[in-house]
Length: 455
Image (cartoon, rainbow, N blue to C red; front, side, top):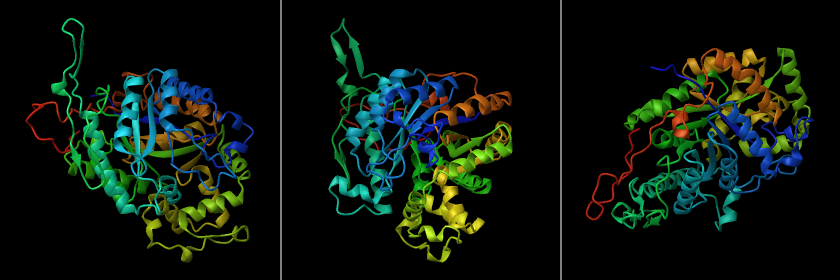
């Protein structure tokens, strides 16, 4: 059996993951709307044999765009442009089950999978931002449980749509004149609480069958959803023990659904500040933190915790007693991460803001390439991660130093590939291609099956 190896994604955030990245002298904020900038990043990640590039998104403008690069290009358009500029690297984009419809999204991701020849991945989110509701004609943002109820039905619908053409349905035989075997193209006839969709999809089954299903929520509802559906889970953890608990829990939940736990990859975020010495790395991190703007940071803290503080509070302890842990906000996984930092470390407001500035609650590490590789190896070998979403503090330099200095160390230790062995994202991740639920039934008479998947 081949030794287990790391999976690495490049998580591209406009300008970089530190909130002050756009102000750093090594950044290039004038290129944030230039697709060639992102194509170049994707090619650099492909040259390093990364599994995928990962792109986050949300269906509303962030309130704090005044102080940071918080706008987004539309992910499916963006990824299609990257597909044309690359050959092997996976392409993962975020789309909300709360603010999209399954038929349209099924078409979009199937199209991306065809265009890229099997490299698409969908990061499934239910959307936490309440301001999104007003963009879609809603008076209020659906509550957490309602969003996940819709998400479960959404997955039932969209996976059936991807399955609605059997693999053999497209014939394209000029001699016989048969283009498509319509006995192998199936309506899904879904009638549910949230959706009514007849189907079938209006294009053939894509190279991967389905895009890889990625999920990013770590609340109780998010964990249950991941155990049932996710093939890769993007998560945030500050400590090895927390990551180990999450890793074991998701694998256990997957097994309880009859799935192979090895086919559910756990990929925490890591944002590395790298220097030739530990002191140099810390100085680089401090340089970024000195560029932060308190107005931006305090607004982020308010959105995460619901506590409104001012610049007069910066050097006071974070007021734990003001944080409500009983409301809707407390269900969010990032809330729990930040609350854990406060309870564990007892920081001042300024110290907490600097912690969050690096990657919004994901783990920020500082050190030499060797020490960064040591930490990655420890989490990988001690049951905390199957790989990482690499979140460079700034771009493109923050990624270049990781690819040039850390990746070679991981390769020398036998932990990461030297080149691709497959062509699809499923092959990079070691995931099976799902079999269509319609593949073994007669088109005319059999009932529409329910979604029961065993990886």
